[in-house]
Length: 253
Image 1 (cartoon, rainbow, N blue to C red):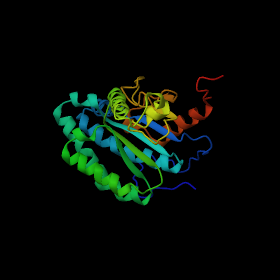
Image 2 (cartoon, one colour):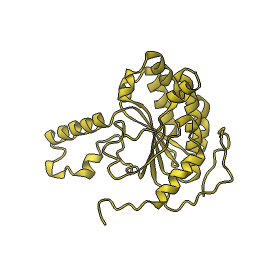
Image 3 (cartoon, one colour):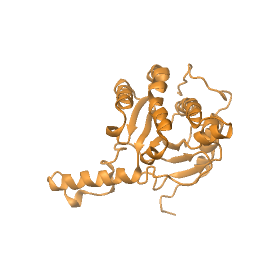
Image 4 (spheres, rainbow, N blue to C red):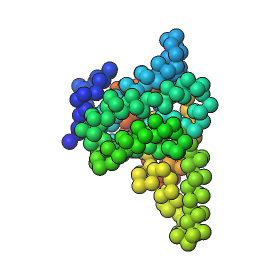
C-alpha cells in the first residue's frame, strides 16, 4: 500500500490523479536543472530559484513515496559547481540545513532513508555535519531511499573506484580475474543499489553533466523544458507514463 506524506506543502496537488504502480521504475535519477534561470526570468537573484527548488524536491519525494519508487537520486551539487559565484555556493551549502530542519521529522515518520553520494570530505563542516545527522537518523528506515548527489562527479567516482580496486588487488584482497562489472560496481558510491531505470532532466538541456556515468549505461532518459521549480507531480507522472511505453532490451532484440 502506498504511503502519503500529510504534512508536505504540495503547491500543485494532484491528489485526484491515479497512477497504476505496475512497471513503475524502481530507481529514478533526476538532474534538477533550471533553478537559476527560473529566478532570472523573474528578475530575481539565482538563489531565490534554489529556494523554490527545495519545495519541488519535497513534492517529488512525496510523489515517489506515493508511487512506491524504491530509490530516488537527486543531483544537488556537482564537483563542477564550485566554479559558481561564492554567494551562490554559500547559499546552496546552507540549503541542506534549512531543508532538514523543516522536513526531517516528516521524512523519518514516512520511513524515508537518506544517503549522500559524492565527496563529503570536501563539503563545509556545517553542511557535512547536517547531512551526516540525517543519514544517521534515517539509517534504519526501510522505505524510499533518497540519495542526494552532493559534491558529486561521475568521472571522479569511476577514478576513485578504480584506485580502490587496484589497492585491493595490490593487497591481495581481490584478484584481477575477480574484477568484473558487478565487482567494480561495489566500489562506486551507489554500491548495493540497482542502477537507475529512468533519468529525468528538467530545464530543456539534453546532456548528463557528469552524472552517474557508469550507472546510466542502460537507463531510459526523459527530458522536459520545464524548469525545476515548476516541475510538478503532474510532470513526474508524465515521465512515468512514457517510461511504461518503453521497451528495455539491454542490447538484446
